Amino acid sequence: MTRTTLTIRHANFADASDLARLAALDSAPPLTGETLVAAVDGELWAAIEIGSGATIADPFRPSAELVELLRLRAQTLPERPRPLRGALSRLLPRAA
Image: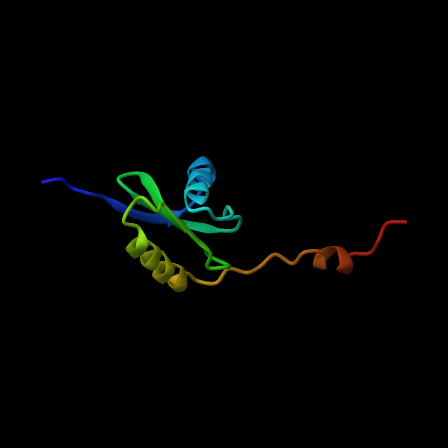
């Protein structure tokens, strides 16, 4: 009997090449925001961009159920505050 390990976690910098590979296999644009990945025995099979809900997956693997698990997991994450772009600079006095 073979044992398989499924891991769902946040992507990190070390996943960049695997995420690019998945996007290419899926003929999809790369994910650019905060991302969750589904790894089977340490190999990335699917990913979801949390903010947009965009997904990529290996079309040569049975990954449809992994995408659904990623969607469910992304929905349970607490909402993180978004950075206030430019807001601080508008509030601070300008140097002469």
